[in-house]
Every structure is written in C-alpha cells, then in structure tokens.
Length: 575
Image 1 (tube, helix red, strand yellow):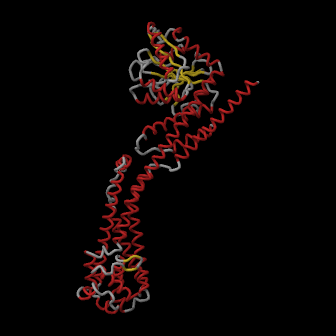
Image 2 (cartoon, one colour; image 1 turned 90 degrees about the vertical axis):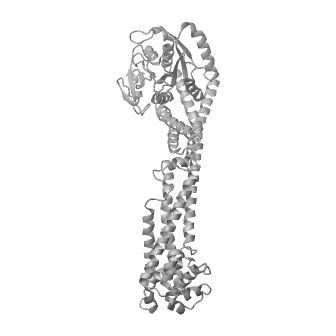
Image 3 (tube, one colour; image 1 turned 90 degrees about the horizontal axis):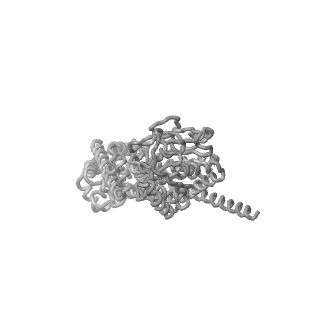
C-alpha cells in the first residue's frame, strides 16, 4: 500500500492542469490538497503507524482554541491571539519521550521545526510537556476562517494531517458556514472528529448543545463526541479552571492509554483519507483528459494555419504566380521582347536553335532577374507567414485557454517573428546560390560550348528559376496561360538547348525541392512559436490514464485489506 500511495502521489504530480478550462482551478486546488495530504499525513502515517495520536485543535476565529490547549496541558504553551488575524506558527505539544516521532522527515515535512515561539507560519513549534500522556500529541492550528489566506491554508493543511480533529466552536459562531464546510469534509472522509462547544453561558448550554448535536447528526457526524465548556474566568496564566476541561482531558487521556482505541481512531481516519483520495483522483484524471484534448485542439489550429501557409507558398511557387510583375519584366529584358514573346502566346513548339538565337540576355540583366526573384519570394513568404500567424491567433482567441496562453506568451504571436524578414532573405539567397551550383555542376563538361558561354552560369540559373516557378515535379504546367506560361516555356527551351530534356527536368525538380525545404523550415520555425507555448505546458497524454491506474491500484489493495479484515473477524467470532 505504501508503494501504491507513493505512485499515486507521483501520478497526481504528473497530471498537470495548466490550461484555464472550466472547472480547472477547482481541480488544481483539489490536486494540490491531495498531494499535500499524501505527503503531510497519509504516507508518513503509514510509515510510522505506531506514532502518537495527533490531535489537531481547529476551529473558528475567537473560539478559544489556544486557551483550550493551554488549559488541557495545564500551562501556557501557545499564545492566545488578542488581535485578529493572529499570525504565528502552529504549536505541537507532546510528551518528551515521544519527541522522536515529530522530526522533519515524519510529519508535515515542509514545516521547519523550532523549539521557541515564533510568528513564522512556515515553522512548527515543538513543545515537550509531561502533562501530555505518551501516545498523544496536541497541535494548535490557526483559524479556519481567518481573514488572512495564509492562515486559512495552513489550518486546512494541518487538519488534513490529523488523526483526530478537536474542532472548537462557540455559542456565537457554531452555525457559521466556513467551519461547517470543514466538518462536511471530515464526514465525507470518515475523519475522527470531536467537537467542543466553547465559551457557552450556563443558561444557553442545553439549548445550543442540543441544536448543535442535531446539526452534527444531520451532517453525518452523529457519532462524534460533543463536549461543552462553559464561560469561565481565566487565571493570570490564561488558563480555564481545570474542571471546565476535565471531560475533554479525561477522554484524550483514555485514548492515549488504550492502544486499541488509538489504533481504531488512526485506522478510521487513515482509511477514510485513502478512500477519499482515490475517489477525487479520478476527477483530477478527467480534468487532465480535458487539458490534453484542449492542447490537442490548439495544436491542430496552429498546424492548420501554418500548413495552409506552406501549401499556399508551394502553390504560388509552382503555378506561375511569381512570373508576373517585376520578375516577368526583368525576365523579358533578359530574353528580349518583340516577335518572339508575342509568338509564344500561340506557339510553344519553337525549335531550340530559333529560341536560343532570339535570346539577348546579358550578365547585368540576369542579375536583375535574380534580384526580382529574391524580392518576389521574400514578399510571398512574409505575406503567408503573417496570414498564418493571424489565423492561428484568431483560432486560439476562440478559447479562454488560448487567450490566456497568448497573453502569457511574452511575444505577439499574431504577427510574424521580428527577424523573419532577415531569415527569409538569407534562405532565398542560399537557394539561389544552390541553383547556381546545380547549373555549374550540370554544365561541368559543357563550359566551353558556345551555348553555355553565351548565357553563362548566371543566365542559365535564372532560366532554371523561371522554370521552377511554373512546374510541378519538373513538368511545365500552365504553358498556355499567356506571357507567364510562354516565358516559362522559353526558359525551359533555353535550358534544353544546353543540357537536354531529361537533365532539365531533373534540375527543375531538384531546385524545386531545395526551395520547398527552405520555405518549409522558415514556416516551421514560425509555427514552433505556438508549439513551444504548448510544449511549455508540460502536458503528458499518458498522465490521466497513469493516474487512474495508480488510483485503481490503491483501491484494489484497500478492498483486499478489507476482505482480509472481514475474514479475520469471522474466524475470531467462530472461535
């Protein structure tokens, strides 16, 4: 069981709930409460099952908890608060010979152990007293309804670490909502509880106690002992007369003296805590499922936006879109205008020699085409990247969780990265250099031919770029779409005149793939900004099922233990 509970704690810690989904905050708090209870009470208690019975004295503001503790011990060990809220460390009173049970590694490990009075709520003040019988420890906790949140959280933490609650209220406060919220939790968890009705006028004891008893019974706590402490003058040490707390002291001493009775209290509270933990764990697992699903939707939205951008750039790079505007004008300057291009609108089957002889390209004109291509590609990629960022942001804005992620991203995800233009410029230049190297390598054995020399590496490279912008897999498409298509045909014929048909197809395909890889890398880097936000959530798709598995394992062991106890009980009865 101890191993199973340690695994349950690990599974709870792994079930992150970072997204702002409906109900997520409630389950975050529940998850943290469960981890705290496992660490503060359940696991330490299983490891030290023979430790003294820990009685936590909790309750409402002004109920007289500290005065009650001091009176039970017979000396001032904890300071009653005059001003509210009282901020101080919790005080644990124990028999000197029981000190070993309350070390840092055994109970409430997050609280520092001190031997002196302090106002540090992160410290646990240990007080050894012969007045406390061996086998019993009393812990004075902050107010459960304190106006200071740190006090309330600490009170809840301490009560969750108790074997027994000694819950203190008063005639004036016994019907308040907050204390009953804690008592409801105690009933649901089968926590052992005793209730003290403190500071009650003599004439009101019968009426108030009867009403409180009915309230306890109606809320599943009918078996909880109910003690009354009448109003009384405290002495100079702040203690009530001994007879005012004699019943409570006697009851606690009887528990301390009876090992079986102590064990029964510990078993009741521990088993109830474990049962409640597994039940609540399944709700956390369901919330974790919702987190994983929400993150998946957000990831798909980002992927859809950037996949569309990649497809849009690829399509524009292959359907002749770039063979318009500045690129087309510079290309026409390079190949020459006039009758050749006019004829290409209607006739694309020119002989290679006729095409080659018509080209008037010069080195500086080839450079202008290169610059125009560079500018056109940069504009194309930037436009699609901006559009993808806007689409992804708009999709995330539809969800509260997405809005929170966008707000906390530390950058404007609705726009392309600030340095994207520089990256695109570099990628396009690298691609153009790659095309240049392809042509140079392909023409290694043709560098002395008249045709190769006529256009040079730069001229043939721009022709290859033009072919790429109107081809898919190296095959021309849209050759009948007017000047743009005719220009691509002319580029292909020019290249074929130097390298041959098959070589041109291979060159075009390699150049297209090279461009596609670079553009995909650019857009994937932009997509990665959204992906990084989701990856930073540290969500595990397996965490919900691992939590369910850990919870079922604890339940299986608990049920098996119950059957064994039942079997032993039957055997004992028959004997």
